[in-house]
Image 1: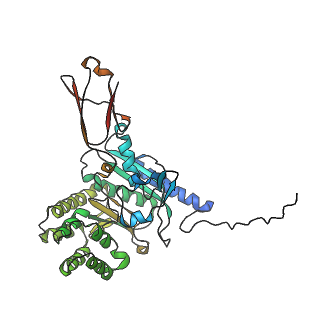
Image 2 (image 1 turned 60 degrees about the vertical axis):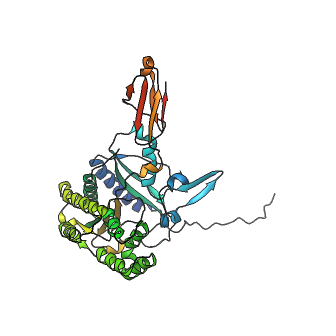
Image 3 (image 1 turned 135 degrees about the vertical axis):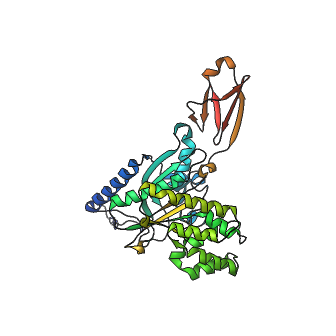
Length: 369
């Protein structure tokens, strides 16, 4: 039978902001990834991987502002799903689910694609790789780990041989405490404005701060604070001379001083890092030290390696509990304890007069024979 229908011709193309490479470039790309992996593993980090698609309620548990607007979100049947926009939030979910099977501090690296629905432009893609490292504590985690991350960044960039670079460091507590003295209870939007200073300029940032309700004195002080950049000792001394009577500010300055003082122990030369008070990071979950890294010969690229400390991000997925249950004393050895579905090995409970008392910082625990 003769088919009179015309064959539909589809022009081959990919979506704007997505990337694919020819073999010669892919080989170079893979070689760079190998150097990054080798650097991470030399510091004792271990690899993991997580699904590209997450449940939206999990992925967006602690995201807002521009981040939430950029997420690729869709429904499949009754499921509300999203493509991961970074590797940090999936890590929090991963640690929460597998806490009983991990050894803490948990030092992981994860290299994978992430997706953000922002306007494609030079240096910004909708699909791109992130090469993450994290040190996850169970309880408190010393700020000296923040200094080690700077050491990893330095070692990685030296192995990549991309030219001279500088790591800029700040602490969100310094910024939050500073603005608190001007009556800003939630500095989230203010910090987002500060973080955009290099992109939109000082005048535009001041206008946005005014729109957020900051008075003239506060806007002027913010501009002066954001202009501070230089050697750690000089900037930290200047921050202390401000005599800001805010405990969060003071804690941030102390942390900044401790981190900068420890960085040299990881072989980072003084000329490769500095304190920059305009570094804020736009994501909501950062709570302490933040970093951004710039190539000296290519400032037009902006930050090409960034991150920071985030405390209790996993608390969005767990519930603090204090469980007490009664067990049979004679058969106590046959009981097992599970937290979030994972068996807690080596668990030593408080067992008094036939009552098993189990305390966990996070997670839902069950007791089974």
